[in-house]
Length: 182
Image (tube, rainbow, N blue to C red):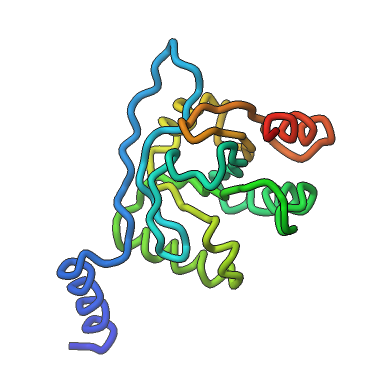
């Protein structure tokens, strides 16, 4: 047996026998036509491998959610983070939520490992929770318009979306979010 094949088989067996560190796919109920936008209940892991129950365990009564659907949107999220000064002490509580259609257990591990290597700061890793779920259903549940741009939302611990903006930063959008965080 070639070394690479042996390594892949051993890794696969590790995942199967130990229930390894990959989070499960998330089931999201279909949005109700009459309900207001709400963050669905789910169990997710951050890049520090800590499990949380969202929205109940959001870090604050009002949490800023930075939501992206494509790798190319990271630059826009980084610009929002910089302009909102999210790296400063006393800033709003926030979470970064990449939303990815579930690729299966092995590829979830691969994606999370890749993201960990790209984010060396453990404080930021602790705020990044990858949501492996059907994107379109997630978008519908939160009342978002699409997956072609980033979405920044303020939600409470019941999951209610208090405010929401889309796309690139603007002073008007920032003011709207800051008001919702009060």
